[in-house]
Length: 458
Image (cartoon, rainbow, N blue to C red; front, side, top):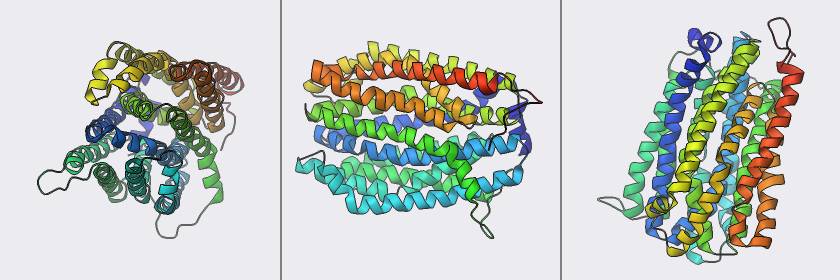
């Protein structure tokens, strides 16, 4: 197990990035597939059903943000401690992570059970949308512990260099979701026709399967990391170190939830079809963004390990190679969205109004994809070396200074079609902010990083 971790400091960087990232990229693609299939199934129920699920997208994103943000802090800290050969502290970090997961899951369960309907009524007046969005929200929040545990398992394994098991658990969970969605949404054989409720049940069931498999592997097999159950004591400093990177990552990823809430509020003033288009976009763009996010899962422990090991050459090589890969993926995504928006909306049984709004939206939004690649890789680089606050600042520039106010301003000046231009404009702002922060970090820390000299960090 130690050899698997040590490869992050010795294996050729290009090959290492591929072997570390490809399993995560593949599993993320499978997750993107089930989101798309879910959307296709739900759109075949009705446009109102798709709108109901889209209204809960911000809640799903918030759950993922808490889970992934904490996982990023755990991953980064474990990887750095392994690079420093501090194995016992790495064990303590992993042990603390599970306690944090249970606390977060309990909070979401309470809020979701009691306040889902009140939340939905802020955005909808149609009774079908209110009822279906409410039950969907209650199911995914009350059982949010499943996805939180699954993500935590993944990050602990990935921090040790194990990318295969997270891939397998994600694929099995996603496959379970897809199969159940078909039977529970439409009703086949012994399964009742549940519509939106069926989509929610299939989602949490798939997450539960992935959680169970990952938990079995983490606790039932030998690893470099050992989880403490008995005799465990809370260490406030470890929690502080986790959230030094994790909290900014949580806030950063939660901004996507805030962004969607704001955009839903703006778009619903035009039509339900505009909200449905946004839902189609966020499901479809996952095919482009998810491989890049999978890439970041692979490079995070590489960056953290080599920063902890004080190896400047490998650290910067990992950054440059991953940046080239991410931009190439995103450029391909731009081409797809420019050339085939009609075919994408065909999959969702789109209404004429959705075609009219969506084709234009897809072509405008995708202009900013390559710029987004640069921001994403810079962000994970900052997180990997322990500078979570810098990642947060860049995301604030993109999503608070950028997309939300720009969408509001453009909607007032240009109407519905102006809203979509806020996406590429915000990516340009993010690119400028990322470049400034990267320059500051390089001059202050990376430039002088070598075997004898490194800024001491927690």
